[in-house]
Every structure is written in structure tokens, then in C-alpha cells.
Image (tube, rainbow, N blue to C red; front, top):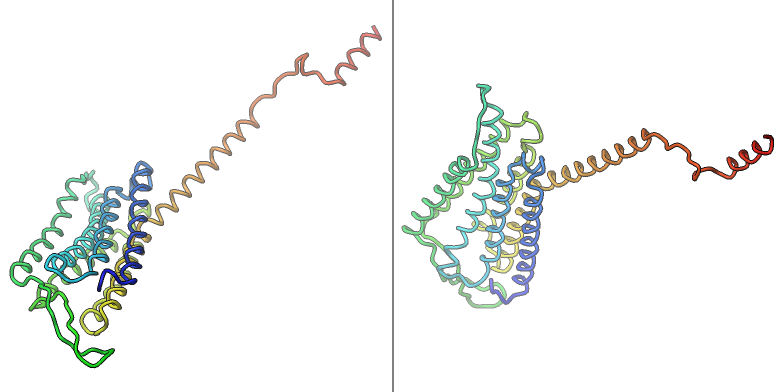
Length: 305
């Protein structure tokens, strides 16, 4: 996919818009981090999830351009790191809620941020091990293949990143499927916890988004032969749209609840102010506050005297 094509320019603008939305989401979460709704949702994990969106956005741009050794290695790394960061944060959020609220022994449990980050590092270590083995044994090199042209008589040379074996790609897919199913299982376990702490419907919706995206991308990548520009547009749109949908599923309900909480607080303050105004004792009349009728009554009494 040449970087000089209009399709790449359109996808770059799309990626820039998504990046701006992610930055705005970070600012909103940081600004409202002390609000009960955000604090119960573990705002550190929300920020980590948003940062994962930057990896996916970068991958949508990196899949364009002439394949080089750097790009061939960078593209799968960006996608996998983004996936692990987003769904790893969701899994850790659910695991923390499970350990605090769903333990059989009703005793106080403290799950620190450092502890859950250590658990999250297991998913990154799995990615690193697979990538190190892949790049050491079968690095995806830029490969030229000659195929018959579809628009004229003759042949064309196509450059793409390819490995001699599919096994490492299959290992990555299997590892991500484990992460995905673990998040789905934990969200099912905590489904009865207070809605302020669990996000089972939104995690399930995020899993569905990823599965639909995979069902669209996998056949396109391995079963359908199409032009490079067409494939890139489908790939970039799928990555960016799935990222936006997942962020909306995980953040939009919290923003709506923040707005509702602010509206409730404002209504309560207004009602309290009006109640206090009604209960406040009326001031006594003074000479300065006498009306014209009071003055006329006083003059009439003086004439009678």
C-alpha cells in the first residue's frame, strides 16, 4: 500500500481522529479520577486500556507503506501489544473485583496496584516469549511474489511480509484467545456484584466486537486475494472501528453516570436551597418598611386623639 495514495491519506486522518478521541478520554478520566464512579472502576486500568488503543491506532498506520524488515516486525508487535494492553486491563479489573467481593472467606482483602500489575506482566511475558522465538527462528521478511495482473496482460511483483511457517502466528492467536476467554469467564463470575464495580455486559460486548473483527479479518488475510489498497482500507477500518467501539463500551456508561450524578447533585442543592428559603423566618416590619396604607392609618389615629 503506497503512502502516496488517497486511501492512505484518508486512513491517516481517521487514525488521527481516533488518537484525538483517546487523548480526550485520558483527560476526562484523569480529571474525574476522584469521582466515585471512576474510582470504583479503577481509573489506572482505564488509563492502561486507553493506552492500548494507541498501539492499535499505530498499527493501522504501520500496515501501509513498502514492507521492510522493520515494518514486518513492528506490525504484529503493535497489534498484539494493543490487544494485550486493552484486554489485559479488563481481565485484571475483573480479577480484582472477584478477589475482593467473591472470596468464600469473608475477610478483608487488599489488592494493590503493584500486585495486579505483576499479574498483568504475565500476559506481556507470554507475548515477548512468542515474539522472541518467532523472530529468532523465522523472522517475517519482505518477500517478492510474481502474480498475473488482473487489469492488463502480464505479471506484477507484489511485496509482502511472510514467514515460512504459520505456527508462531497460530501461537499468538491461541494466546490471545486464552486472554479473551479468561476475561469473559471472570466477567461471568462477577455478574452479581454491584453495578458500581462490575462491568460484565460491557466486557461481553467488547469480546463480541473482537470476535466479529476477527471473523472479518481472518478470511481476508488468508483466503481472499485482493488488491493491496483494498485490503489495507478494510484492515485499517476494522482496527480503528473496533478500537472506538471497545472504548465506547467501557467509557461511555461511566461518563453518562458521571453526568447523572452531577445532575442529581445540582438538583439536590437547588431543592435544599429552596427549602431553606421557605423555612427562613420573615423579617419584622420596621419604620422604613411601612407601606403607604400604614402611614395613612397612623395619621388617622393621631387626628382622633
